[in-house]
Image 1: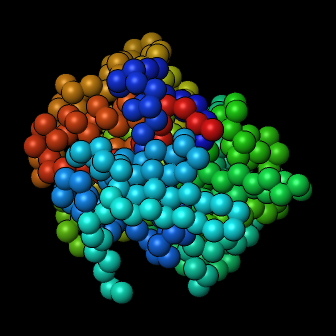
Image 2 (image 1 turned 120 degrees about the vertical axis):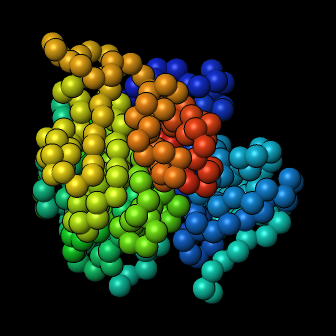
Length: 105
Length: 249
């Protein structure tokens, strides 16, 4: 991972769509997820409430350029999790999650 | 052991140039509880006025190194954290670190992972977490068939070039295949184009669809690699990706 314009070997995004080309993996926001849920979350499976597809959180599509962090389902593109950090609190919207399976806890 | 989620102070103990724009930074973290190859850390810089900025960096070093980690960072012109590391930081400086983080983009030299063929695809500094896997693999002494397909723009921008040559020469089942997309030295016989479906198919070839795959790099490269691998028959949950996006903040 790196910050800023990368040393891309490919000058243009895959779609030419400036939003779609900004997408990262859920793995990229592992630190924020760990803060929000209190444990490592990227290998945690979860079901999308919109389309019922099950994916690990690390395989969700992560959008980090908004004021918060948005995770979308890679199958249906529905919003799964939204996280907003403020100076005093963290807001976590999980309306798009049907369930999460946390092991060993 | 401190919680991985807590911020703690690491000390920069060494700075090593890798290419003209990439350096490795060794961080000493006394209570470091170890990590898994492929994980990353968050770094935080805080200015005197309270403004702070965080960035995630993949760990380049193998888990076998105790009490320290190595990060390999490309200098980005507008990158607030990478420009601090490249232009200002010197050994002895301290920096806030949180981690290790992530359990999705991880390879371990134990259990079924150690036996399965391993196919790694990197673009530029996307090689960093994959290098942690290759260093871990070498230290653990597993000989599973492994291939790294590594895309760089120019030969002099190939990160870890000498070490990759040495690892590939060890005869333990690793081969490294480079593609140079912008310029090639005289006599270059390797690939000279961006990674595409045909290249993925050719390099994956001997490993077959039973391979586990990790692809890290610019979003476009990772999309091409992941889509090609799924079309070649790898189950989607064995194609792990880490995109770092076409632009940054």
